[in-house]
Amino acid sequence: SNSGSLPSAAAAPTTSHSQPPLLHSNDPLFGGGMATSIGLWDLPGMALGTSPVSMQELLRVIEPLPASDVDTLIAQMHAPLYKQTGAQTHRVFVCDQENTTYYDRDINSHGRVVDVCVVDVATGDKFSTLVDPQAKIHWKAVQIHGISYKTVRGAPRGPHVWLALLLWIYQRCEQTPGGARALFVAHNVHTDTKHIGVELARAGLLLPNSWAELCCLAMSRKL
Image 1: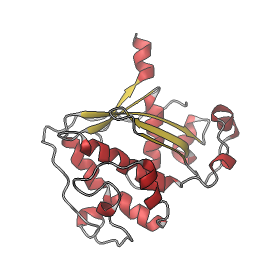
Image 2 (image 1 turned 60 degrees about the vertical axis):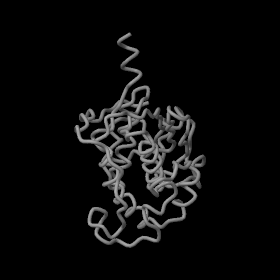
Image 3 (image 1 turned 180 degrees about the horizontal axis):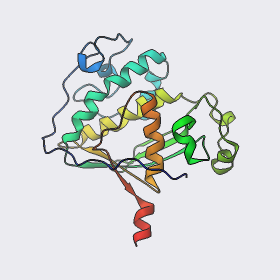
Image 4 (image 1 turned 30 degrees about the vertical axis):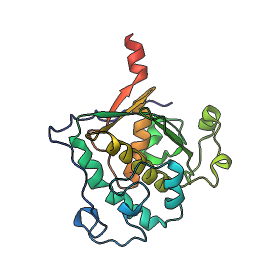
C-alpha cells in the first residue's frame, strides 16, 4: 500500500445517541426537495426496526439507479451519519483497498479505488467488491495487486459502491445497542481511509470526524 494520512478522528460529543428521524428527500437537511426514484428510507435495511442487509442486497437495488439519484441519496446520508457522532461505543470494521495509483502524489488528483473489502468484526459480515474506476490503472499498481482494467470491467461504478458501503456501515452501527460509531482497523490504515475518503469526497460526502482509525502497522512497530 501507499503511505498517506487523514486528520485524526475527533472525540465524540457527550450527547446521547438517538435513532435518526424518518426524514425524506424533501427535507431541507437532505437537499431541499431533489426528487429521486427511491427514497433513502425505502432502501433495504433503512426502515426503523429492520435488520442490516447484505452488500449484495444493497447493490441489487442501487446499481440500476441513475447517477443523479445516487448523488442525491449520498447527500441525504449526511444527517443520519452525523447523528451517530454522539455514540460512545465503537463498532470495529477491518478494511482494505486496492487502487489505480502507484505514487502517493496521485491520490487526490486521479487515484481511484478498484477493490474494497470491509469486515464487520462483530458479525463477520463482509462488504467486498471490485469497483470500476472508469480510469486508467497504473501499470505498476497492476504489478502489485494484479487488478487490470479488464478485471474490473462490468464491476459496480464508484458512486454506487460508496453509497452501498455507507448504508452497510450505518446499518450495523445503528444495530449496536445504544448506537455506535465506526472504528476502522487496517495495516497502514491511513492509506486505506485516505483513498476511501477521497472517493467519498468526490461523491460529495466527508466522513464524520468521529469515525476513528486504528493502525496495525503502527501498533506492531511499538511492540
